[in-house]
Image 1 (cartoon, rainbow, N blue to C red):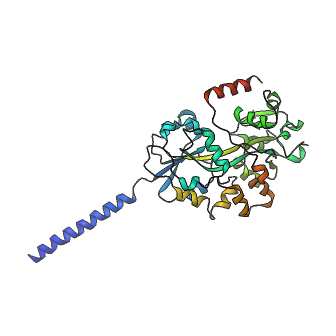
Image 2 (cartoon, one colour):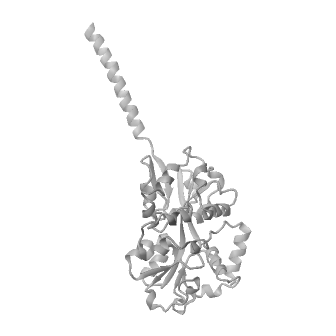
Image 3 (cartoon, rainbow, N blue to C red):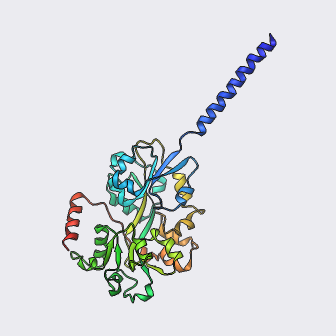
Length: 333
């Protein structure tokens, strides 16, 4: 009888232990939180600084051309990382408010101005995580006999006629032209263009098919360091800013990962991310006071002079009527 009772006790005990193992196995195999974004549009540190409860799921550029972001958001997505140019293509109703009050208190005036430019529908649903200025990249600069080579005026050098790859964004180019004093006639700027192809701009220059390109610093800094034929300027008049932002889909129950943001721009990763051509969306004055140790050769590019940085600008989201007027203005010049 005692043996039988012991058997029943053992059976119950081992049954409980087995159940715990099964439950434990279920918990460790739970689906991870999903961060989605276009690969290579941000540094690897953005991923390596995430906790192990997250995984990165890439969105290929080709997908974005065929499938809008709001369709992608129907899949499991807890956080979306994207370039600010895609922001207005996501219905604001598919995003929830990012309640990161403490982090927003540390945002720079440039970051706040950028958010204000998104409009009321988006400004609380988008969070800027990094910023990179647009720059001019040259190949074999010494042989080009450039003029005004610390200004946007350099793009009108004779050596660059029909030799510059511009971004395929009339809005961005018009903003640069207006900074230079051009109002309605953009034909002179167009005459310098080899192509309008921001996606392949770096390849145009590296391959020698073009002498220069206008592109974000973050997309060319690695090649700049490795290839001695390349050089770069951040014009003294300032430059448009390319923002990397986070959005939180309304279908996800997960809160915004404030700890991740703090770790990404903390002491461990700060210098590494800056060397990739990105700056934090926090106070620029505080950043310069930290004396970040980067190559002296690229110091003025990776961490610009404050007088130049203060002249940089963000592009606000345009209303439909404004887009039409801008396109008409560009096409008729």
